[in-house]
Length: 224
Image 1: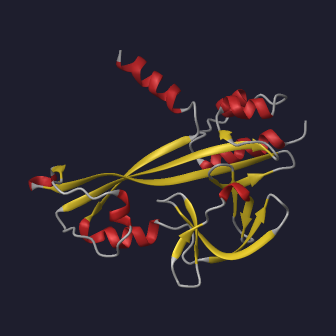
Image 2 (image 1 turned 120 degrees about the vertical axis):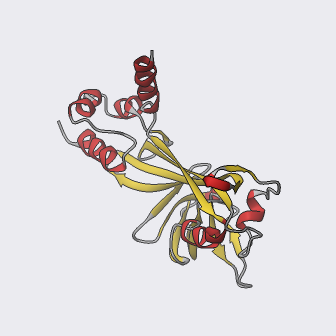
């Protein structure tokens, strides 16, 4: 019975190219963790915003993984989210590209016919108090996601932990199409003349690993 459950779990986990990681952060480390993990870039980076109407805007931008928003700093020094995301085609700073289709997708690889992208999110799952022998229990005082991430000093001590979930999900699309979650079926649909299943199985590739996923993408785009 256990073997059947393990096989079933393995099959389900490989239906979609995504992975989740639970991260526990002690209270006295939370400020450092947020500073390191919140944004895509170390600083706001000069970027070109390509609009669907053909216009190009230039601004210093940074992507906020916690808020899932593209941020900029206005003339007052306030950090704000871009409000008109629906008008954006894509954003590029020369090294990195973000596509927008109701939400932001980070570019990984592309060919003449297809694009590979990823979405990474951090979510605050829980706040716990660490007791004796390392045991934990829910804290009595639980702040909202905004309250936790929106201040530089938090009312936390070394005996408290914040529990975050980091989720990484991969997507694929045609050059002008909409992104869908990457799996054997969606890749095979885009490349019907390639035997994607056999290639993955023969090379023991894991679509949850970015390196392996790029390997499959390169294979799928090879002529012949």
